[in-house]
Image 1 (tube, rainbow, N blue to C red):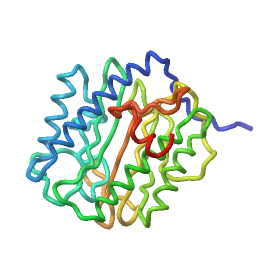
Image 2 (cartoon, one colour):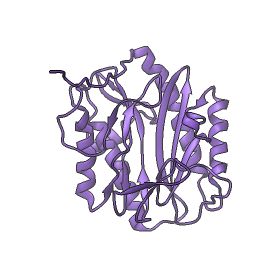
Image 3 (cartoon, helix red, strand yellow):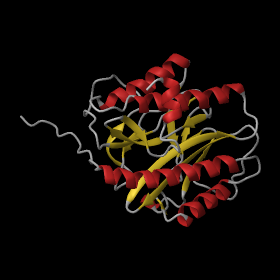
Image 4 (cartoon, rainbow, N blue to C red):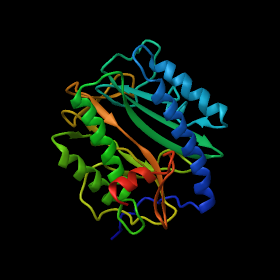
Length: 269
């Protein structure tokens, strides 16, 4: 009888994690620029231009551009678009929209990957709550990423928090992933599931965690462009992501400007 082999997880040295921090910090700083640039009237291509210029000006290479043919530096997904939206000069942001901006960069061969969802102008209370719930669920998942925990402990922490906040659709079939010398590596990290399953987390592992939460159904559809994923009921979605390293002192969030200290203090590390 053969046992199914679990996917190998790339281990990093302390020095390699420092290189990933360089990539992660560049991504975090780029997303901060984009957050400040989001306003009614700007196009998603304008945002893409800002991101590419900042990454290249600081010695990085956009992770997404050319990845399996993806044509841009960021994924820009508006309202019912969940992930993988393609920037376009004709896509103009309007007051009341929400936009998910996913960004990756390579520095010295190592990747950082992070995403935020930003309100455009004034949004409804329902949409702002969706953003708050999704972002907070990300940090519950990150907090569970400690040495000795199981992979799905992060998944369960994300789902449990979202379920405690109301009736939301938790996207299935898309999720977090290993990261390092490649942007997407084993294993897949679902945003739902029972705890205590999957590989045991060890110091030196790095992952990107990314909950995607919908106002309505969890069901999705991919558009004819082969990239953009939308909600089937046309209700809005939110998406947040961070790259982190498992360390002896707990999770170190490589794409957060403060490495997660503020959020972990708020939640109780």
